[in-house]
Image (cartoon, rainbow, N blue to C red):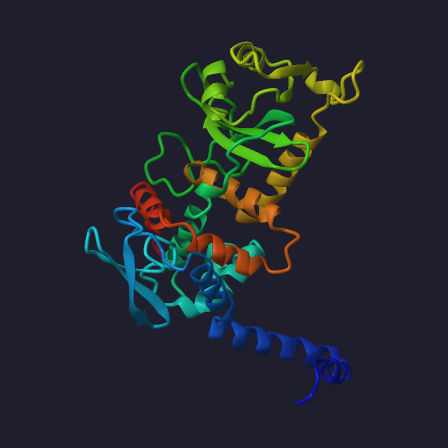
Length: 342
């Protein structure tokens, strides 16, 4: 058997076109075998040994063999059967061999329809898989932010993409909208963005013309630790929020200044940079429906968190396999989702 160094030397001798073709063939072969998914599954099984019952949360369970390499269990308390994938996005999936290819495309920001065409699934299946995966990210938002936190809101147009009963004329372009028509009509979504100076991010989408103290309180409920230094602009609602939370050290600056003239540590450069990244992240999707926006914000934050990992696909699978409520969240999500007609 040739060593890896010998294989690399032989590979380097091939023309560029042949190298590309070979890499594509090897990638497809690996994805069809689903080796990354199997490796993630084995790691989860090894670390927790037994999966608690997803139906009653009991640890009084025992293993009952395997079906298609998936470990089966039975609960001694509620007597129900379940598998290692029950409750996860991978539950009841018939085409697990295509999930590795799907995740690779998803990481590249390829739209739903193009992924469906590339890996040979329906557009509706492509849509469902994306949101099953994103449902597993709800439990991976930071529980608490501390130290120095910058906070500001990103204003995006309210998007009714996919809705079939609009009470207005459809927009021709993404920026073809009137901001906050009338007293009652809201045409924007505020993305409350809190960013620790060390990089941890918390994003919350709020449909609102202009954030109130109550909306900020609800969005940031329990997310800021005591003695946190909170940097914001001079929006009065942030001042009112800080006044109701005296354990927070609040520093406000003029938004147009970006950096406080008297205190160079008081700035919003980190959060402004995150806002630019969010816009760039959302651009390839040609408009995200506002009712799905929170899922995409969680996606951006999670992908950014594991960006430097050399095993990002495996990290995605580990996250999915450890989220036992993702399938339930997806079921709730589907009640308000649009059925795609093709």
